[in-house]
Length: 122
Image (cartoon, rainbow, N blue to C red; front, side, top):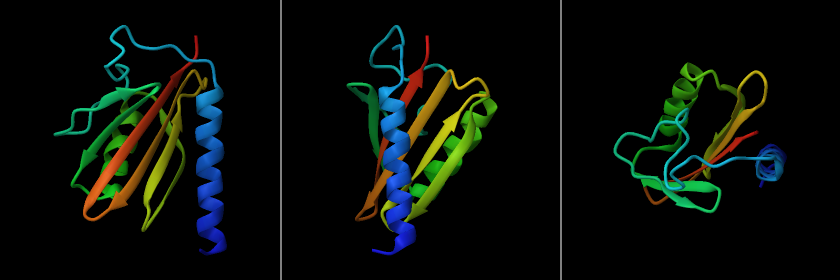
């Protein structure tokens, strides 16, 4: 594992930890994504704790491109993005940092497992 890959993973872990530790509120329907995050086309995200999971046959870069564009239209902008053979990640927040999201993708055997962790401060 190269230094860049290790650094990217540490950054991803640090951002995810910061999001999980932040103060958050859940949508009215605990199984629904917040209104400012769209479901990926053809997916049915399932809530697990504070995150949402789904699988797709699409490559990680295509999923990340979709969410970077969709979140931008919702006023939530990319703060960090990375990727490689393992999959990829996207960290985004609005200007006031009251809406944050971490999207992590693990790619394996032609499928992408996507984890979306939204945090909305009260």
